[in-house]
Amino acid sequence: MTASHQRLEAAAAALMVLLCCCWGLNQVAVKLANHGISPVMQAGIRSIGSAILVFGWMAWRRVPLFERDGSLGWGIAVGLLFAGEFVFLYWGLVFGGASRTVLFLYMAPFTVAIGAHLFVPGERLTQVKILGLLSAFAGLFVAFGDALRLPGGNELFGDTLSFAGGVLWGMTTVMVKATRLIRINPAKTLLYQLAVSAVVLPLVSLAFGERGIVDLSVPVVGALAFQIVLVSFASYLTWFWLMTRYPASSLSAFTMLTPLFGLLAGWQLLGEPITAALLVAMGLVVCGIYLVNRPAAPVAAPAPAGD
Image (cartoon, rainbow, N blue to C red; front, top):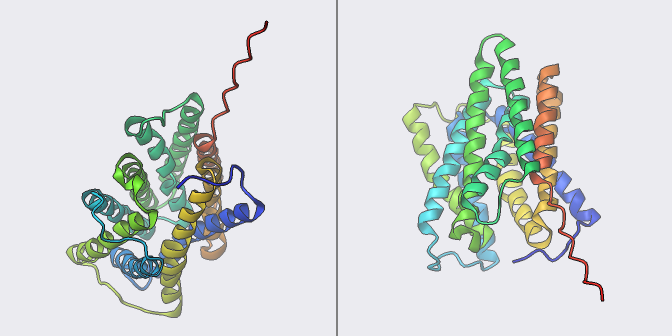
């Protein structure tokens, strides 16, 4: 389905800001729930709950689930990438802060830009996008350098795990864009990711010897419910709905707000320190996200020949 509006309406823009706020808060929710549920098991429970909700929504909307569209193999593959992303992300939040994690997780748009250039016809890197990539990688160097100056070394390990999660997230998006998954209903693609990870992540948790569920306090349950209902279910379906009505370039520009919301949430809700280096790194990454998602200037039509 193609976008039916060429420009964002005020309500759609406000909805995108709300979605970015929700995604920025997600890292805080994961870190809170880590106090009562082991990281990978938490990710698995999130996928199980969200998969049930998405399945129910698709059944209610009568979205075809079992038609033979040739997507099963790619669906399993993208689900495995999705599961790997959350292994790295949830363990990254054990060692690093939410403010830093959201910065490294949002390497995903740059992975998408490079992967799409290689594998998606018509999505080439331009000079502006390359400038955005350079800005983002400069931000990475600043952030990693900041971690080296912090005591304990845990932040550096957490940053590395979060960066790996961001790369896998980007690879997931590229796989969707470059395969027949791009031609099926987006909700079915989301269900592939959730269903496969719902099976894989609990098994990985057992293989890691995690303790599993150790404390179901009110904050832990609330943080997990936030991830299941608002992030993995409601926000993703809303995002897909917006993508069917508005230009992707206009919507993607809002993603630069997500790491800013994550930075503020970690500071306000978890009391995480914000260093000058982290602010510089965030600024460079946000600038890079804007440049990578910036819509190309329209090509002017040639002037008609004179008499």
